[in-house]
Amino acid sequence: MDLIHLFKWKEYFVEKSDKKDTWLTLTKFFAPFGIAGIVVLLIIWTDYFEFGGVILSYFFPPTSLLGRLWAIPFGLRLGLSLWEVIVAVVFVDLITSLFMVWNFDMALKIPFLGKLILEAEEKGHEYLNKYSFISRLAFLGIALFIAVPFNGTNAVMGSIIGRIIGMKPWYVWLAVVIGSFLGCFLVATPIYGAYLFIPNS
Image (cartoon, rainbow, N blue to C red; front, side, top):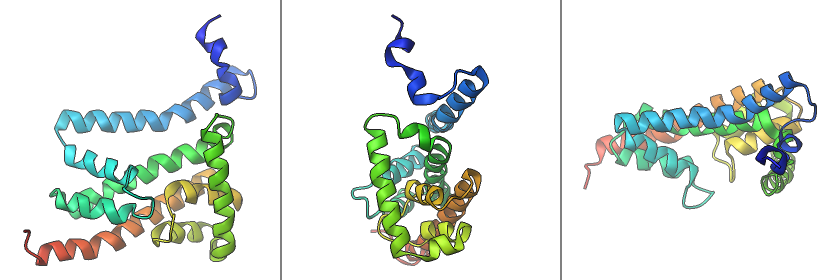
């Protein structure tokens, strides 16, 4: 029995046996990882480890409440420019949102990951009840939800909420990216200004 049959990969990736559908589904699943891998290789090749440090600090913050409020000051402290820090944080949101809008249904079938997504979906319904403007404004609502630092706002949650209210995947992704840029700019600008006027210790 080969490994492909052993892991029953089609149960997780595709519902049809059509080759075209199979390769399209596989491409959507692995493309975000491929893009992230290319960026990691570029960081290593160029010794741009400060940029990678910001990405890691945003992806793995000390607590889920901090997010960009932790990663942006960290990046500025490392000596990166305002725009370098913003691009690093937005890149993480771009990749995680791309994975979610492309693979939500398939990811639900994967053990452990599916359970986490279902829990996040339940949380998304709570956010919709709490912040009714999201469903009323749709695209703009998702962008504002990501931009304003509510408790628990992130690209994954924004992508799930976009799905709940019935938005098309590419519109959800674009709204998340725009919201991420706006949110990073709102957080980074005053912090960067403080770094310019307060001498480094």
